[in-house]
Length: 120
Image 1 (cartoon, rainbow, N blue to C red):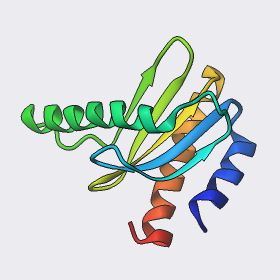
Image 2 (cartoon, rainbow, N blue to C red; image 1 turned 180 degrees about the vertical axis):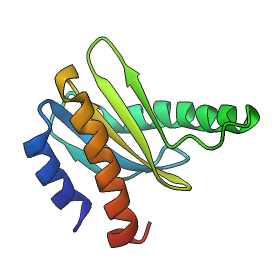
Image 3 (tube, helix red, strand yellow; image 1 turned 90 degrees about the vertical axis):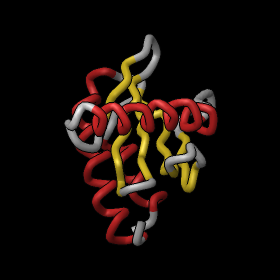
Image 4 (tube, rainbow, N blue to C red; image 1 turned 60 degrees about the vertical axis):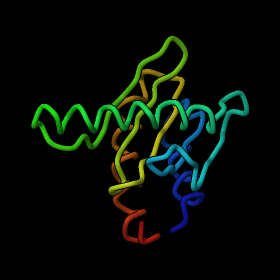
């Protein structure tokens, strides 16, 4: 299943999903899905990709291990970032707090499927 097919399915199940992207550790988008044209995924991934790197380094420095997921709540959106595998992560942008749990669940499912189907 392609990323677009995954996202077509997820958008039906997660209310308020504004967009999603697969990015590498440098913050460069590999694949993206936009359901809200006001969301600038390129800028978002570049900025939060840096935060992802800092979170990974902090986990290792504190001997807690590598971060696999983190969430950022802002005034307008919730970002769910999930490690796909070393060097790649997926980010979901949602506008509804009630969908937060579903977004986390589907980020995990899509990440696992992408490793298998796309060989990431």
